Image (cartoon, rainbow over all chains, first blue to last red; front, top):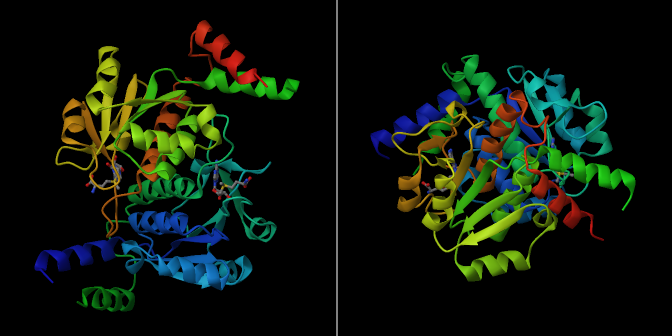
Length: 191
Length: 191
Ligand SMILES: C[S@@+](CC[C@H](N)C(=O)[O-])C[C@H]1O[C@@H](n2cnc3c(N)ncnc32)[C@H](O)[C@@H]1O
Ligand SMILES: C[S@@+](CC[C@H](N)C(=O)[O-])C[C@H]1O[C@@H](n2cnc3c(N)ncnc32)[C@H](O)[C@@H]1O
């Protein structure tokens, strides 16, 4: 490991956001999950969650690309099991979902502890997911097509979260605790 | 065709932005192109351009999904042929590209006639594309991974273009001319 590389690992850990995460609600295509993991890393997310069947998860890990070593991905058997511990810790759950009562995604406050809940390719966010959400957010669409690809939607929402957190100075001071920082740095620095 | 459907076609045409487009510089994966077309439609883009070999283009059209009937996609043999007519019409070319002199993508003015130039999966924007660009724009990344998937990058940049154009009232009055409006409505309304 070069000094420059070590410096880069430290820099990235200084930007990690322990109170921002993604939960996917039965997103099952490996390439969509991979693009979401890559996008999560870019926003400083160090850990995300997938509600999906074990066999889909195994297939996804099998084809895993580089970014997965930088973001830890926990699998959960259902969306309630994924969301409940986060809700108990005080996270707001923003479901990316087109509903009657959805608000424009830019109106949400992403500087609060936040879960972004993303729905499945065909079925969108499940009824259980919708119910556990504190707010439904939607990205405006001006065309004939009714939805974005899920990884594109993730990118657009996370770019707004990054913008708000950058303005709030949340990337200018370390946000993860000493233990997490040293532990992760140790793991990443292994050859 | 129901009256509601016809109303929807008209509404979408009222939002079309004749002075906003995308040029892809050898993006070759069909699923990336499809996601870009879908995202272009959502921002009100009615016509986009791909610089790519004819055989890749044919493969892409072969697997084409729904959104392609709403956005017309022109193929060009190289990026210069794609960009020159647009530059001659006064479009600024914003290359999505990480370079020394790149500016944050939010600093660009997307209310001007604008081409967003997107680079290939592996190689990024070509040297020829970079040279024809008026500005290089970049989306901030806080993680270990060095780039977004190209369709995710397209989504993030187009969401900013949509935001600026919405604020400028560019979706509140028809922007395409009478000919284009009536011609497209006629084509779309065919059974
Ligand atoms: C392909 S979409 C699912 C479409 C599904 N037919 C529906 O109506 O929910 C997959 C996921 O991407 C996200 N998504 C796509 N377009 C969105 C938009 N305009 N606003 C918010 N989220 C969106 C949502 O999380 C959605 O569940
Ligand atoms: C996978 S990237 C190409 C990476 C390539 N290795 C490079 O260095 O250019 C594909 C395209 O997505 C767009 N893109 C990806 N990440 C971007 C970012 N952070 N800022 C601007 N554009 C980006 C660019 O158009 C890029 O050419």
